[in-house]
Image (cartoon, rainbow, N blue to C red; front, side, top):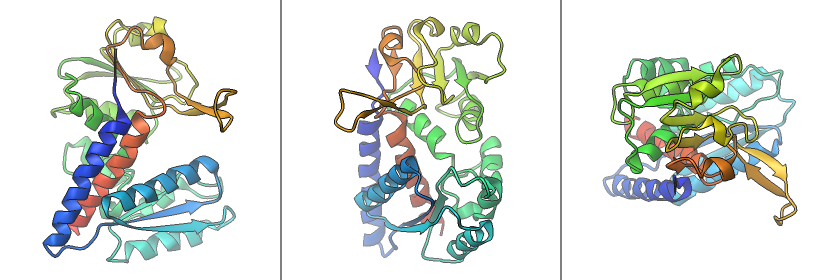
Length: 290
């Protein structure tokens, strides 16, 4: 078994992005600029946004963080999005999810200009992705593709099973793995909560991508010997062995599944860092286009 080390790979990718930024500035270009809007004080969202701001600094980007109270109205949030849309100095915009229940995530996503949608959630970007046209890919699926590519995982002709059908990870992941691209050309099965013969399907997977959001859902009995396993899930559980009193675990029972697979992503240190690196890559692309 070999770890698909997202932390190490993301650092390599960040170094490459930083080098591109240096060259961009040397040729008279401007610094790429990422803006983030954080609504409310959700602990996990706060951690994610701070990590993104820190990553921007590391690669030489400018960043802007706009904090709004959880009681902010939908119209005020949409006005903030429009202001960033109209700001030529800002190349990319992310609105950290989840949002409070009184705000429509769909409305917010559709208000962001597709050319600044570096999260890759706008219908225009998702549609272009579907047609295998140039677009901003959703950051987590794009990070997984990058990770598989850097480890030279053979995907062509393989059976890829995706567990979870969210528009953020599962659904776009299933499309990307089936596309006629270097990391792709899989026969893909997309499974979800209504799939009745799930274990039978997952045991046939050469590549298993799990984005369900259920703690250690995938057990060793569900995994084919020698499979490649990508764990997108992340759950915070209490722990007496850590200083913080908490520990992060995934959707895959790592200790037992790792004994059967050829490659596996750890949690933490797997998909998470790759998501941030992909966001930076999209922002650099947006800056070049602008």
